[in-house]
Length: 101
Image (cartoon, rainbow, N blue to C red; front, side, top):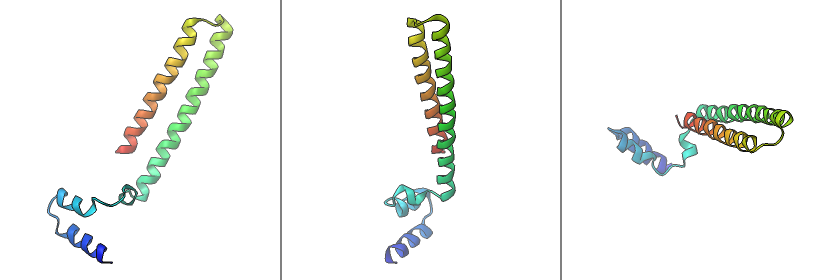
C-alpha cells in the first residue's frame, strides 16, 4: 500500500512525461500494457501466422508444379527458397511494427 501511495502521489504531481515516467519506470512491461492491447497484439500474431501458412503452402504448391513441369533446375532451387525467406521476413517485420504501435 505504501508503494502504491508513493507512485500515485508521484504520478499526480507530474507535470511532464519524464516525471510521470519516473513513477512507472521500474514496473514490468506487462503491467503497463492494457488487456485490449495484449488482445490486439495476439490477434496480429495469429493473423500473421495464418497469412504466412497460406503463403508457405502456396509457395510449396508452386515449387512442386515448377519441378513437375521443368524438372529440377538451379534457378528453381534458388528462386523459390529465397523468395519464400524474403517475403516471410517482410511479413514478420511488418507484423512486428504493427504490434509496436
